View 1 (cartoon, rainbow, N blue to C red):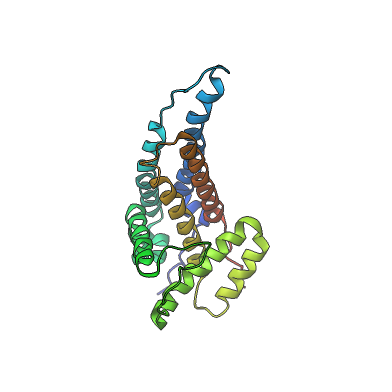
View 2: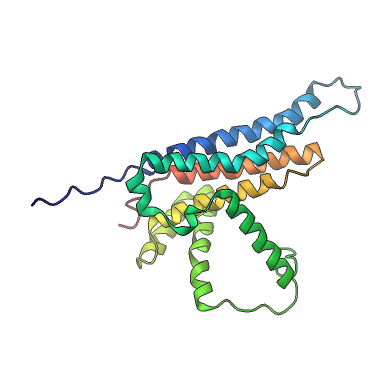
Length: 231
């Protein structure tokens, strides 16, 4: 009996092609939505006051972005079922919409217990130290966040961070890359969700552009293939 052929794993940019395409489109959509605010202002006569603006495209974008990305991720899973099954976790099975809501709920709870964060530091008060299991659960997101920050500004430092983090075998390159993509995507989606009740056009347009930057970062990481980085 011959041994089965080893599973051929496609490159990351192919395995996540639909998600990458959707993220790239969202990046452009964020810029276009911001343009619906800035364009009419630029076209208005110099002496005109009170330029009428419509925020409908921004509101639609803020509500449709999550489902669009979920649909793209499901298409990728259908195209590469074997590869996706190897990487699938309970966290990845949840929709981006649900994870946005969970992330916001966690922030509300943290503010209620610790007080709002000011200047990057928790308000004065007693802070319970994390348990061992909580520390372990926080380790991977912390690494993914550090990688994402470094990857945008200093790719060489980001690669070295991955090499160090995977040296012990506790984490894989794929886990770090996938986690970094999710962090960037969720950041962009949460930013957009905050636009649903925004009434100031300039603030809405600028916020859209900030969300677009997060989606662009997610594209960069999702396209990265660092299979040999731990070697």
